[in-house]
Image (cartoon, rainbow, N blue to C red):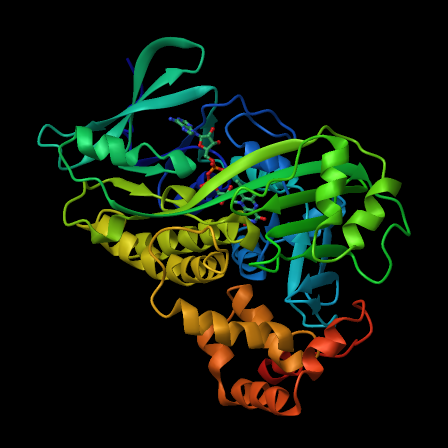
Length: 473
Ligand SMILES: Cc1cc2nc3c(=O)[nH]c(=O)nc-3n(C[C@H](O)[C@H](O)[C@H](O)COP(=O)(O)OP(=O)(O)OC[C@H]3O[C@@H](n4cnc5c(N)ncnc54)[C@H](O)[C@@H]3O)c2cc1C
């Protein structure tokens, strides 16, 4: 059976309606007369965690560059998030962040971070995408196979089946975008069609998230809007985040590397929090009223698929989001990387949706976009003794240098400002190697250890304006 042939014009299909799929659909809607999203889960008109995205139960920070790209495609998104109760706060000023043995400075940078639950963010975006007249969502249906031309050179649609079973239907399209996440079926489909699978770079880290939601009351937290406690490997491999969410709630996520996992019972959860490198979350937890069970989710490995290295690939098929690159969530890069890939898709399609070897142009540009966050995540993960796999070249001297940068974030607003811009993918990593930064690190080293002394104070003492940012305004 054919449920939509696309015979009256070019149509696009997106498989998976999580964040990457929604962003892809938004972009495609300006290039194709009709866009169909296909989602395995039932999708209701509300903010909720679906079976296909269990990660939505855990803390989801959105980096500034991700928020900027999303706002470009959904003008007014920050206002809608705020109106729904989300907190959009200055990344440095609003975040009490303990890392590298001390508290980072809190000061105005002008770079906003969105503190919002993942289901609420996705729901806001979904409403925007589905309000576009040429976008349709077919939920509770999954894609079982790709349809191709006889020579298998081109994908011309997908076979879909109701999630409750039944027979397959065909949905024809000029472009199919796979946004099915980490478990993307494209490598298997490629093999079935006689193509090579992409090379995969897998870096096992054995991380597990354990999270719970609590009621948020005024006065719970003084001097900051959120708390992040980073691990201090190799001695301490534990992370804790306490972030505000809409509806006056906190989400607390605890994560551990290399098998050091927070238990999912109340006592174990608190005990794990007490062993974080700083006490802020553990002190607050006993006073908070739980609103949910404790959920856990394993994140075994960083995984990148190098589609850009393939010499043959069917026309009419692309992959976006976690299916291309899935990073350790501790660095908050996944949604931003998906948004940046959607922007690449937009650019590439602007040159003409039907140009030959579109896939090659797209994947090469996507590779460039994910390279930086990927290298950053791996460099950081190789500080943990149990991380295995291929280490990025130069990561050892790089980590030694970054350790100095990290300590400087306790007292030097210029260095921290540059660090925040790199971390938020606003500036390239080279920013941390500019002569002004090198000079300040050298001066800190020469003065000897002032950095770590100041960092031991609780955050909130040094409020200033970020000179690095001022210089760029
Ligand atoms: C614990 C955890 C915490 C995270 N925290 C952060 C964070 O703080 N910041 C951040 O930016 N990112 C974070 N991430 C990553 C982020 O969740 C993802 O990068 C982001 O959701 C983009 O994923 P995606 O849309 O590519 O895939 P997914 O979210 O995995 O969605 C895939 C979708 O495809 C559907 N699907 C699958 N197969 C089929 C099929 N055959 N047919 C139809 N539909 C199908 C699924 O149901 C699902 O809806 C975190 C991830 C985890 C695991």
